[in-house]
Length: 377
Image 1 (tube, rainbow, N blue to C red):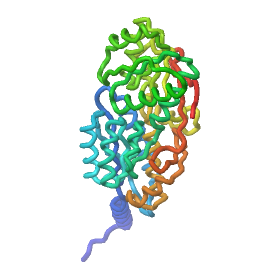
Image 2 (cartoon, rainbow, N blue to C red; image 1 turned 135 degrees about the vertical axis):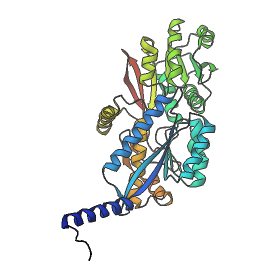
Image 3 (cartoon, rainbow, N blue to C red; image 1 turned 90 degrees about the vertical axis):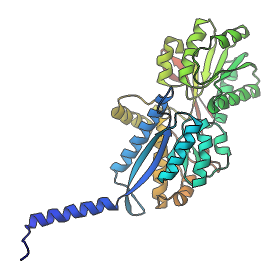
């Protein structure tokens, strides 16, 4: 004789079974994320990871479906250490893991060689790397989430000559793909605007003593010193400029405009400038709301390019939903033609994978805070 199962228990068992089946039917979509999560640029990388995770969590909370099937996004985070050799190893691990997209890398010197691996595997790569070479390799898998050095460096070069009226300009870069790239574009724009580069100097992305370089250029009486590199070097450079009595404005790209530069440089930060691709978060309603959610979640402010990583994840999800597929071969053509209003900017890509429109915001440090000075196209 079969045992009699109480009706309530039967319903509970059926509900449990249905729950297991529903969970089993949920497709996990692996998304690769790569940035420097250790070393002197770790604050950038952690900011990027925080924002990407925020996007993934918000998407999953919506119980998304793609092609009529429930899905769940999973972020696979890797530390590329801002090292091209490590970065290509990370790229291969992502390919082997079967990721459907990659958010990264942060550094141009890492993104450029990694792009070849993603292209061979047919995996879309959404990067904030700004060196023009990233999208000039001809890979249809490469998408840039910010303006390129050609745009940012050119805007800063025009600003130095036309707005700051600098007649003597010194350029220093850290010899990385990013630092040298943006410095080259800045120098070209200065010369095209009728300005003069009085001297070009080089350092590296681990240096923190620039006394020899600054002492050598002081007799040139530069009104502007442009630095192609990161905030961890720009801050001591600003301090040493003040100590040596070098009466010049320090200019740099997006890696300079951070809270870290302000805290490391202290009162030596005042009067210096940085240019970032895109607008300010607080100038966009969605950007302001994103910053509030980010601060509530992580108990800190946005560092620099985290919003673009957030937008990158949302772009991938939107393209997948429109295509009705998580497979790169199906959704990547949709991504290439997508128009999307993000928290950081309005996204649409040209045939190379660059943004069709990329404004550049130039800010100045006033009373220890970054303040918008100009928005240039």
